Amino acid sequence: MTTLPELPDEELLRLDQQICFSLNAASRAFGGVYRVLLKDLGLTYPQYLVMLVLWEHGELPVKRIGGYLRLDSGTLSPLLKRLEAAGLVRRERSPEDERSVTVGLTGAGSALRERAGQVPRRLLAATGLPVEDLAALRALLDRVTGALDSAVLEAAEA
Amino acid sequence: MTTLPELPDEELLRLDQQICFSLNAASRAFGGVYRVLLKDLGLTYPQYLVMLVLWEHGELPVKRIGGYLRLDSGTLSPLLKRLEAAGLVRRERSPEDERSVTVGLTGAGSALRERAGQVPRRLLAATGLPVEDLAALRALLDRVTGALDSAVLEAAEA
DNA sequence: CGCAATTCAATTGCGCACAACTGAATGGCG
DNA sequence: CGCCATTCAGTTGTGCGCAATTGAATTGCG
Image (cartoon, rainbow over all chains, first blue to last red):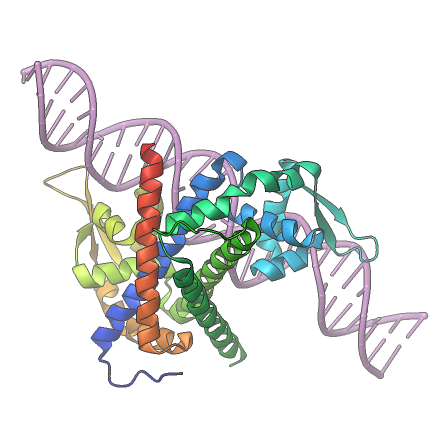
């Protein structure tokens, strides 16, 4: 934890701007590329993330999907309904805990995985970065995410 | 532009997941911290970005604000209306080009800059990263944003 | 056992992001 | 000059993200 010593406020303001600007721009630039790549799959980017989780882990309760993606039911419930309406996903109340809803893939949902196979390679090519730079980027992002989350938690406790 | 040679599809899928997961999580983690920091200013994070632009550049047409922030009128028009309703901003048709709307700060909008002065320092502290790491993060993000944008443009031309 | 606290998914409400479109104003070109 | 393409801001519609609330099911504790 650096205490950011003798930097003047003006410098801080400018640096802060660049960081939040850059992160914002990058996030939406990724969204734009995914939008193009996912268009003929009929998926949005968040829907694709949910499908990735289901392809990897199979049947899951909504709560656990939210755990993987840091999303709550306010976001997931309508999203899953749309995936269900598209015939990719099946939702049913868990028999052993009636509060929980289990989400599983339909045949079409599983089959979509084949057509999605090209997406990662095309996305990586679009980034224009060597794999090791992407790994460094991911490591930095994860570090900052962890720190930001605990900062919010501490603020909430106070 | 690396061509990502002999990596198997399974590896690519996993790496891709981690990158988009990480970026998504980081973006929303930043949003969470900004939400806390900006709460008593009565600003959302995108509204704060617009105010930063206005504080730095003064009066600007909507189009130029969108240029700085990569946002279009579909996002900015309602956002600016809310800032106007909050008394922070003033909007008026440009006399020399009636299509354009000039956005400027009100007294309250300018005054808010003082109260926002603490935000950058508190955000930087929350990231838990030394300044040089944040600079590296920003550089990586900017590189990838540029590459992604041109990739989308090329796809649009084809 | 019975009641209170907790855990889930779902819903509501608000704001942002983006595509598609509208309509007014402008500029260019024949 | 007259017309057409372009440039703006604004509107509409869809989907995501999050806070707050609801309501049902479950758990825990006295």
